[in-house]
Length: 353
Image (cartoon, rainbow, N blue to C red):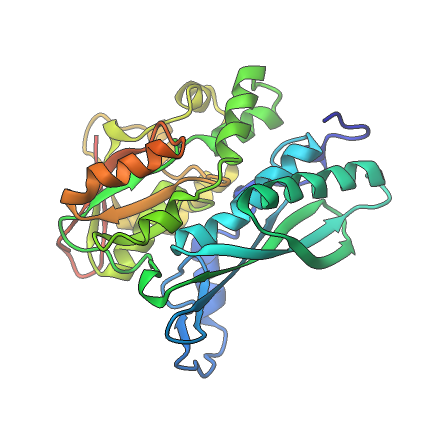
């Protein structure tokens, strides 16, 4: 769809999941908040930085609740709505649940953007919700300085099928569902250095619903699932490591990328969020002693908007896990690493070139 008026990305100081508060700053903020009484029905809260909260309803049902919203990562309003909605719904799939409904979160500079443009954003989100089989059942709107859109999403799962980011086991293989490079592409787009094919590739990957998550959770050999978003592959792999109390190894040569990601990163199309991510957690990352450079570090910490699932599974289940991804159109899904015994007092992410 076409857009009249200013570029959406010009109205925002950051875009997509690159808008996230840096993980180190976020940990500091949360450490200063008071701890509340946690009811026994709350199966998953904030303790391991998981993708969604989980509340036990009864022996057969657990409610999964999440929210995600951000500023524009693209200029086309319809595509912005699609990407934001796909990203929000992903957290439910990452817990192994099936989404049931969404609420829209909308903040728009109504004196700058036309009602037509704002409506296109909402229509993009509604289209994705239809593809996920859920209604947009309500929401909330405000007049804001920067355009903001996202969803609250609720889902359901059997309690035994909930998959956390904190239950990986030694020897597990790590499967990544989508290629990396969305942050690099978004930086290139903002600098008007992304060509038409690059834009199509970016939109295609960021609007692909992570539906395999609700299928994979039925497999006993799948031990942990998360999705790779604003903290980059390194940040979300470290969440698995910390939550599980183990080390994570990534074999860099096996990590899939969007076609132009490495060239664009080499050309300087790197987000500010990538550097903030590195400052927050790279002291826990063991990098190769040779054959490694700053561009690779930027890609390792590149914020992914609506990124892929990161699945920790028993080695015997790898072929079945990959088959689920490939059957649902995730052609670049690949084994990228493994869960290792912890070698030091605190968990580490270890990169092999």
